[in-house]
Length: 539
Image (cartoon, rainbow, N blue to C red; front, side, top):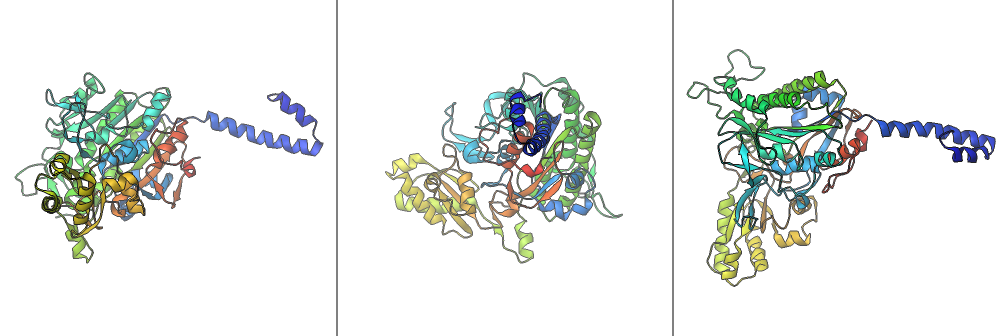
């Protein structure tokens, strides 16, 4: 008891039996406290998002996984009932939620794109979640505008590591700019994405004045050319089976199109990740480095063909193999047990409506433009003529306030009447008005709450049209965005350093990831996080 002289004096005054019991308890507790405080942190956090990867892809294709996904399922902390809480469920929101824990109502990321009524440039119009006219693109065409996380209103887990001086380097990589940028936050050292026009990996002046030499070398080697003439054939194809597509146009096999529409682009991203780890020495700095990688090809393919197509099974199996290659590379450099991996998706996807109909399930295609036109005509008949809507994006509608004023109408009454008309449209389950969402009156059930969590007043629109399950605003293929399980239910696995393996069946949210990582790494929870710490994953 030399460490605690005052406590030792008090123990000596106790009765012998009580003193002995107290001393034993103290000896048991002190080492545990010391170990938890001094426990070695992971050298690297690998944050993996597979774009449009439904939870059931883990179970449907489980027998075909023998690589990275299999390793995480067998040795990781697996959550079988992880969901996004907000509506809409789209790429930008999923990626911003993953490392911030914030819903759009707090993060300000209300979609991939939205209508901005005013901004610093006083140029109303459509903006993207990461568009930034104050930056320039690096590695693409000359003079093009770049991208940045400036529209994200909250911190991310990598930001908290940086502010606490617990991280060396933070890098994000994806085929999509929003997917590379949003998870790693404001203080990242770099974000790299693929520019289809130049076929280069690019960044922006938000992060640096010029691309690092290693990225310039990748671009000079023209990674896309490696796949010229290649065919995408199923991994388990039998003799005589035709390829899915070819990278050669005009061949007997259908043309794949852009590299993004094939699993080859996931291979490019994995190679880019290896190069980043090697050249930026990730995992070797003081503190914990972060590498966020978002594999986009699964989403591009999934939109075209839907979750029941054999191409989705094949690209899922290839993703398992690609992740094994990346995880093996990291372990070879840093040693096993020094990396913490978090694996999830940014959203799911609905079945192709025609596929659903063929198996006697509901579903169909809706035209957002046609519905907006019907509502606009009704507004003209009641309040007066004019261009009533400035912007309509898949049921998210922005009123033209100038038309409201010119017709001496009240915006609240215009929204109320427009919602009444829209509720009568076929296969529209609910219509939310701006006024409903500002009051919070929409949150009567989980679906209403999801609309409320997806609404941020300064950026969101005036009307939200929510279709019935399996109905979608898409003319071809399939899509996502809805608050239904096919779009909200995604994988969530923690694996590696500090993680206790097991399967967990309780409901959790992707918002819980950031809070859990913050607890594991002993930094502040990101500023907008609404998640809780998943203590079951901790060793």
